[in-house]
Amino acid sequence: MSAMTTVWVCFFITLAVLAVDAASVLRRKRKTMEKLRTLWSES
Amino acid sequence: MSSLLQNCLRLASPPVFFAFSGKLVRMLTPLAALLLLAGTAAALFIVPTDVQQGEVYRVLYVHVPAAWMSMLIYVVAAGYALLHWLFRTSVSAVMLRALLPTGAWMTVLALVTGSLWGKPTWGTYWVWDARLTTELLLLFIYLGLIALASLVEDESKTDRVLSLFTLVGLVNIPLIYFSVVFWNTLHQGASLGAPGAARMAGEMKITLLLCTFGLWIACAALVLVRARWLLAEREQEAAWAKKDCIKELA
Image 1 (cartoon, rainbow over the protein chains, first blue to last red):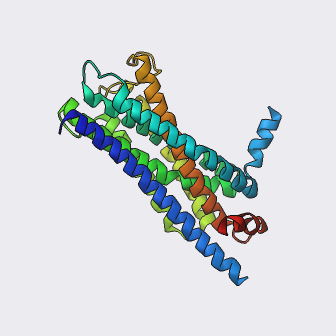
Image 2 (spheres, chains in turn cyan, green):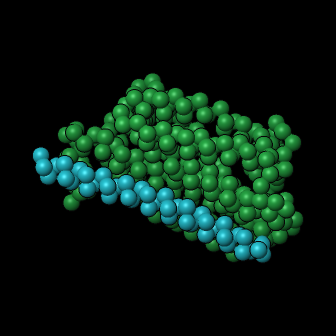
Image 3 (cartoon, rainbow over the protein chains, first blue to last red):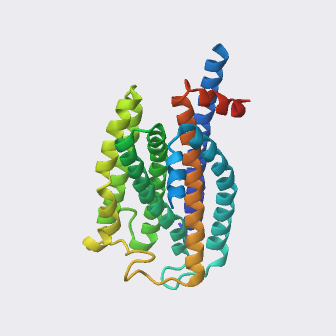
């Protein structure tokens, strides 16, 4: 792997890690919102 | 000073934290995007090539911020663990839980980028060097704490145990940081600040700081969003939760 390829791969991995973490945060938010919406619509 | 302390103490109240963190996230997200974009552009296209390592040294601009972040997040998590141990507030418990996944991801990022950087500079992806081994241990600590947080149903009991184990794991942080001082390692010494640290050109230092602050703010925004919704779920029976969350549910 050339030096610049290694550098680009590292930057893409960083982007991917942030995207995966953001996706897990948004999934948690969506699940909680659905749960609360169901709970409060019943009460 | 006392009003600052009072404002900090007010953040232990779930409705205050929920409202404040919502505003903070709206400010932090564009700022993080801006800093990361500027840092990445500078790192890839503007800063000069290193005289010794050539182009590959640019990995530094993601590896070093990720490694710092992995340790900083753990220290902040330990701070919340101590607060929870002392005061048992919901906010400290959810902040502790919200910090762990992001901390684990930053540790993975530091290990993977370090490994990719190691191959062209050291000739190997991995050595059982003190710095690398203690950083890997940090990943195992994060994974253990995440598993512990999700294993037990009774949240209040788990929070106490989680706090205790987080505080115990804190001993690894000085070991990581000072591993390059305590032992003869293949890993280089401190990048900035410490006596004997490598001297960097001004534009390289500014780029490193841009990337570091960008990642720091991005992590803070992610942690705060996770913490807000963990808190809303935990406090679902409270009147404030229904009143404050209903606006965002619409």
